[in-house]
Image (cartoon, rainbow, N blue to C red):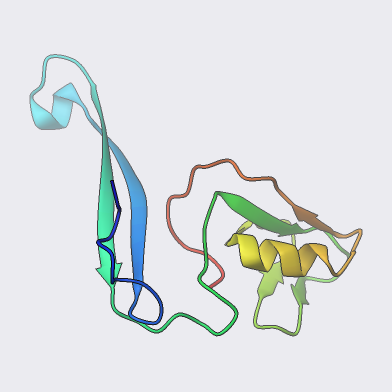
Length: 118
């Protein structure tokens, strides 16, 4: 089974999968008990893929814990101190290569709820 049919690939575009979660409560929705809903949003985006490859989000985050208020890596990523920034695997590898002690990169969690570096 394919997420996107053959032929919908670089440089044509990307397929994005995003989990969505919400709860229905008895007070506002008239249900007998709380209901937890999970769904998957699938979007096809016809947009050129960057020269260095597509961004694949696997739930990783970069957290700057240094002395300054923010960190600019010089490659378009501005990180506020102590604030996790969702990053793709490609950016995670680039940031890890910096070898900084004040930059924590989380391993994949396989949970991603939007936002990010790219």
